[in-house]
Image 1 (spheres, one colour):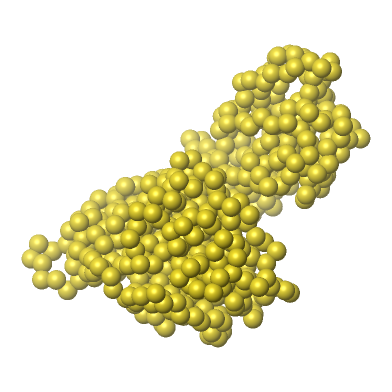
Image 2: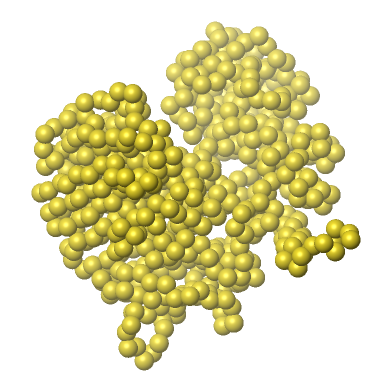
Length: 607
């Protein structure tokens, strides 16, 4: 019996479906470029990937190495990738220095070909060592090449100095256009997305030259080695990944987002008051559609993401809803949500952090729902996924949120992994529909505030300028008359060996001024709760200070070897945690529980 005859019907169907998606994937590449790259190298990368997928199987693409890649790169591709990736004009003859991480497995192909010579110079920052390659350029256009095909995260950076000492150099015509220009010196940063990683060793020959920092994420623009992926949860014509959020008043609105494959062109929400005797039946609302493309996601290269916001709802009311497309398209089973109360009423919300698209999220939400069946919503203080630009990471996160997110709103805060390597948070902003009232300089939906019952929640973005959000935080905290105030964001201001002095300097005075009761953070993969803190010091009264709680919802690092005196409680284990806050009038009860069902911490705060 041959192999084909041995295949079961489901196996044959799976092969056919995968082949169909792969064909669609190849077709899409002729028209759709990567979401992170721009011309001029986009065209070269598009054509390379078209050739690759036309000649190689999905398994071969996922095992691609440097040698297998070379036949698919034409001479014109090499020229573009070697000289049109990072460009600028110089007005006098210069020496251009390229600082390349010594641990990068392979030297970018274009360096030696373009005439760069490796020197004996070395540059260091607090994490990496860089070798220095140099080349003389006449006045005019300088064109540099890609970081490599391997997505090496410590991207190279550049220094420019005059060939004739004492000559002043002017740079212009940058591509990409948003280029910072700094001085090459100790204490300078080289990555926009890691501005506190500073140079510690700079040779005298380079000191005082023009420093051009970059972002680590640019390494992805030519990523082909270990770049092709498959999602464990591909889309279908049935709506899934349903997520409830708010981008308006939680008392009178509800936003819904979901996903389908490209066969579904229209999205509709049908909703009504639960158990209401409504002769008119369901109200229908057409959703906004966004097409998401990922040329490297082999089995699900394009999906449709739908968003709808239901408005003019009644406060404190349970609604039933279903989602789908036009008549005849697949519909979901009815689900339910409840709007926020019109006035102060008791409620419970769940706090997670650093979920990192882990299946632990599913278990923690199930435990929280079993113990607190009427939770109002779940807030997550950042790092929801491992890589915010990978749709398959979001597929895992949303799968693990399951039915919880379809019945309870999520209120996320931005983490460094959600916009990893300075590439932005486009998928985050597509998965969630959040308020657009953000501080100046912050991307829409990446910072927001809302009130629920008698509590205010402010969600600033720690991946953006901390100082730039002072005025916005001051306004949001100052104009609210809520009994309780919560701030939720990713980096903890106070933490053993991981304090964030800029946040302490810029935001903590606002928390003191407006008496924020709780600050909820993550990032360090450890649970702890502080005593009340004011002015950077422990105080005795919760009425005069803020309690800072940091948690983790994946396997954490356990407690620190030694804790500062401001730590009131910490986690005795490295087990994933959820924290439940029950807000009832002038009292908040806090309960932290690990995956084994053990109470890690409990406290009650009263006003």
